[in-house]
Length: 356
Ligand code: AMP
Image (cartoon, helix red, strand yellow):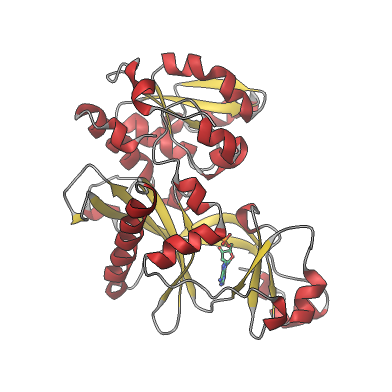
């Protein structure tokens, strides 16, 4: 595997003339908008000319220039050109998915965040080692479907956006619905309300909520809008619908802004802090934005069912700030916060601390 040496990569860069680049999807409008606000040049990587026209609709979030490719893996044949433009890549969920994990890990361009996190985040077993090691409570895992005694959610590995996930209440139901060709995990279905918490960890700044090294911010939170589960009850109860063969699905279609009971916020910081501390121990740290996907139970306990280790699309409602970011700085989006971190690091010769 190609070893990325970030010092070598940056050695030819003009740090006063950096370009922020990402793939034109997911949270790219927010990332370009935030980078422009901080004075960066921006570059969008897109498949298909039609994308260019789409960005014309949003002049303040349109990248200064595009790199048009036939497919995302073609980015690899353009890395020299991108290096000449002093490009720093900001990965988001779709970026990693389109490129493929292997290609992403070996992409020969400076990338915001610690790429090693992918090995811990993309494997559900490793993820559990990390999050439970940090003292978080996760939904119970059911190793053998014969032992399904209460509602479970079945998740296919690698399935993006909740595609194909289903609920089962018994072994028989599981057996009827499972696609045995795919690998899957069975988790206790946690009853409660969902909160997707958007953090930002800086290993190089020491103001605000301090950690042993660096600081932690809570920039916003959202609830995902998932079809059909979130609105299926308009047609009838889930039990009624299942009787006629209609099963709810968990496909993400959008994001809804939300705030949490203020009394729960200290727990939110404590969870974020422990996740960061454990990541520093395990793989050199999760850097920049990350999201804990949680359910809060009726006992006001958080159960964390997933971590996303980079900017999540749930931050998109907050391009002009949020009920949390507004207490840090007006008009602070996650995209802008990322740009600020790069700007600060470039100025203080700390880029190798936040790029990989
Ligand atoms: P994930 O791909 O793990 O983010 O799961 C997709 C969606 O399934 C989530 O956004 C939740 O709505 C739901 N979900 C996942 N895990 C659980 C769980 N253990 N209990 C209840 N709902 C869950």
